[in-house]
Image (cartoon, rainbow, N blue to C red; front, side, top):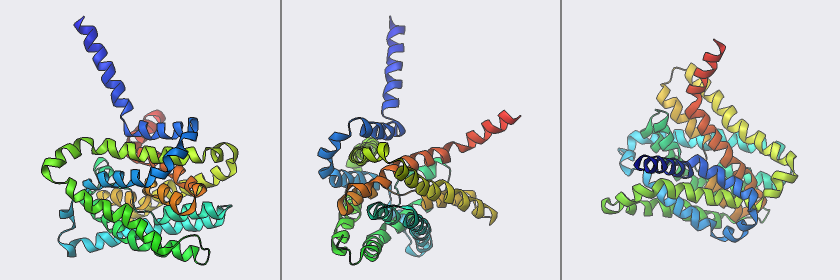
Amino acid sequence: MSLIMIKNTNIMTNVLNILLNRNFILIMAVVLGFAIGDLATALKPYTIYILMVTMLFSMTGIQAKSLLPLKKVIKPMLRGVFLNYLLFGTVIIFLSWILMPTRELFYGFLVIAIAPPGVAIIPFAGIMKGDVEYSIIGVMGAFFASVILTPLIIGFFTEGSGTVSTLDLLVLMIQLIVVPLFLSRLLLWKPVFKWVKAVRGKMVDIGFALIIFTAVGLNYEVFFTNLKVLFLVLLVLFTATFGIGSLFEYFRKRSGNSREKIKTETLLLTIKSSGFSVVTAFTVFGKEAAVPSAVLAVIVLLYLLFLTNRAELKQRIFMNRN
């Protein structure tokens, strides 16, 4: 009897681990967005608050001491800004300007281009044996820059359209980045952080899943009725992540840089906060503009899985050839 109970307990534990797995949660968010997308309408007004809470917990992974001394971090900060905004952003804006059939879809890609980097860069830098401290500094540099660059760049491309106010955008950036960043320092207080650390990962996963569910649910007709648009969106995002990421790695390796730094810089180049871009696109440009960000969430998930598992994939391919 005891053996049966132990076996059942092990099965329940395995099932629970699968259900709480980050990849499973995000994939289910997409699936449920297709299946019960009508419910997304009720959730949409709360997405900005969901993102604020999600950013609050995710930013507890950023330690302020990594930013000292200031002289040491200026170069990595500027590198993060260059990779995440100038290089990645230029590719996204250029391709979407050429390929997108509507202004709203182009604006959706514009939001992705100026979105801050995904905080997932930091833990994945560790998983991939990259330079974790470098990732923290690069992410923080890009986060600080986004508060200024986002209103300026969106204002430049929408000037005269009456679509958005630069001041409103600045307020939104303060709400979604500055406020969660400062409040996250309170959660690092030792008596509180023990609890925060235990739930942080799942809070972030569930928060992003709710946002992705909303984006997919509100636009599910695009995925089923307009395959041309879906293909073009996939083409732009696949090129900007898998394509540009692979080219960047190839040339950086040839220039003799350390593998740890190359891995981290590849993440800084290609990983954007899809949750941020979804909510910003919703809030500023409407639901159609959130389509690229909904697809981005899936592409980023696949790309991170590719980066973390490609060594094993290469080994399997080599073994099959021999």
